[in-house]
Image (cartoon, rainbow, N blue to C red; front, side, top):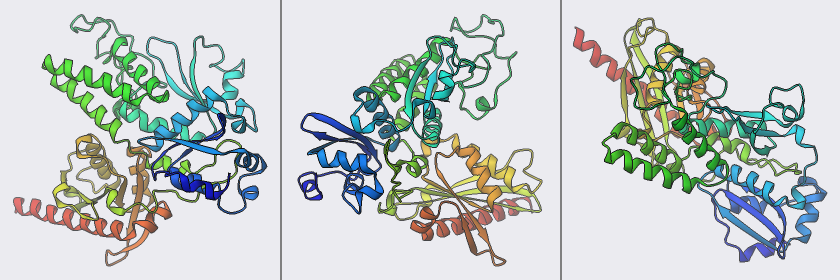
Length: 437
């Protein structure tokens, strides 16, 4: 196959999975952030140097390419793995054994744990995973960073148990759910506190409800997102008829999240070549995409010696500042009057994260140094790109901290929305101070 052969294909600039064939014989499967750019890259430069002899041989044999679009890079990653496992194409054969690869395992328990595990742990008799019966696994995934980032994204949609122990308090007899237990005797794990565990450790969720979460995660790993959405829509309608609007609202939010998966963090790894390849694609972000397709949120804090501390969120989207999306925060945490900017920033970001109906950002900009950047990363768990803006004596942006590709592509927007956050926070703080004078 040569570059001229690509002219007959109208490859989309969308994420997805591509397949090279020789006639009906499937040779190779790969994933792409942009199907158009990714497949074209096979015909750029010295293929022997960039891809290695095996891929060079594969391309010489190939005479057809097919592809399947996905709604997100996350789905492309999961679909690629599922298809490789199913069809085992010759040129996807691994250069190292399964022990070096990663799997996502689901344990067979009342409240199954979902964990990323190396293949060597599954094959080691001394490993705790070796003796677990009926251990379900998905994979293999060659890169730990990819699958761990994928799990972080999935967990925000479908919170699950990983390490915490189920609550063993006796049933209190007050719940309509027969499997529910008392909520007062068990302590919430850290992930429950940040809403990444559904309350297995506190007895807030029954085995039946938890099994629904696990089933949806399994379907997602199997490339069946639309089936999940249909099931959730059906469940939401039933709950709405019963006037259980709070539960119906949570399912509505899950459907929205599935239809608007934010996987900027995965783009950093999506350029990695397929199994057996050596090329890393240079783009770490959707470069070349129109900046108007990106939502950037900036945050700043204002106070007077720690008094009347307030926070502000400003938004840049559709190529400009969007004042209709701005938000104000009056700090009420224990550090609100102690001029503790990192603690106050954490409160603001956590409160913001509890509002998925606002839409989720692609880039978060924080005013400050690496300390503030780390706080934002802990809250958003790598689901978005984080950029920090440090200031000079005149409070002008002097240095931007974060992914250099993102900073390069969106420098003007980052600086502008950051300056607007500072102005908006100061304005709100002055208003609050006037109220007490």
